Image 1: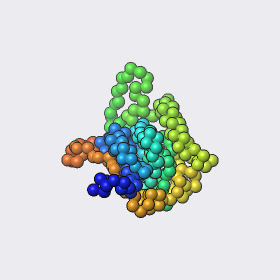
Image 2: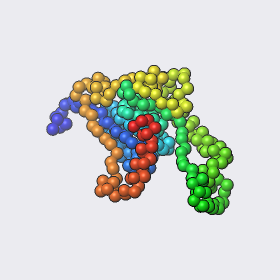
Image 3: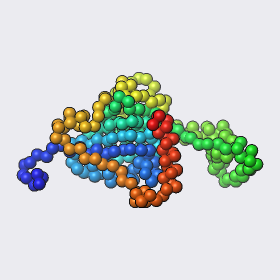
Image 4: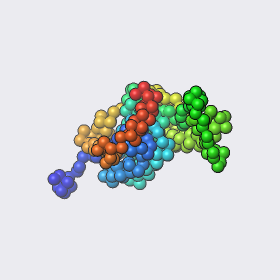
Length: 262
């Protein structure tokens, strides 16, 4: 009822957008298409600021870029400051998302960084040979069987994959430099290393040690309203359908988290 009372001053409002999990186009992964309504709604609320709570080991470079770009575009259009709070990890694409914040806040034990690009697969040519299985591949185009896991690894495939990774890595570095600017230390920060808590702050990858609620109260007062937002699960997932797809995504997610001991 207070909103109908003339001249009543509402307490500051801060939407809290949770970015939890791997980044990609899978059913439950963080993606721009799934997060767009959440992000748009948060910025429409005339907030005092927007908070991002990030817990992600990374994933798709494209989806990371699209999500971060949407946040920055709306922040500039609405004139709203964005605070990013890292929980366990903001690595690789997760750190790309963190850099959408004007300021990045971490826990003593948060893991940040991994500013790099990875391609990973498996190879089975020897196992196939032992089983007497012959791989037959006919292509139109010399790169059509690039990095085929059933064929021996070829130097030209490695060179081609590195050539594909280079512009993605360059875009990641440019994004971090554009967002963090003079805050960054002179150290080599772009070789995919990770750092913990205060180390990340000292290197300029984050702005300080802080948690969401006390930080927002210190900035906007004890009466600040924190309104949670998050990516909704798909209808099929809520009814336990798409089990095979969810299982495969779960395996991939575990591999991403395992890199950071989580």
